[in-house]
Length: 69
Image 1 (cartoon, rainbow, N blue to C red):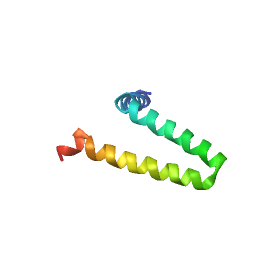
Image 2 (image 1 turned 45 degrees about the horizontal axis):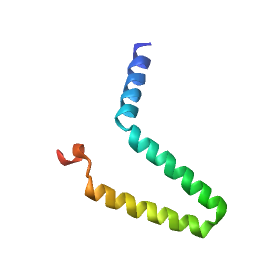
Image 3 (image 1 turned 60 degrees about the horizontal axis):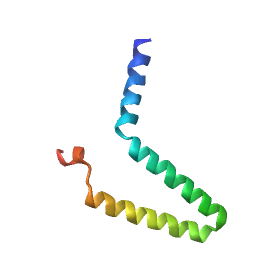
């Protein structure tokens, strides 16, 4: 039982530290899914724009934890 509580606390900590990223990914998933329902080619353009925007964001604001390594 103690191992289960430890695992749940680890998962809760992970979610609390990354809630913004999780919500961003879920939101982008719904946008792409809705676009695929409208038109496939348009959805591929949306996915490409999302990946380019994420790449620019990650270049501009790198993860602070990764810099220490």
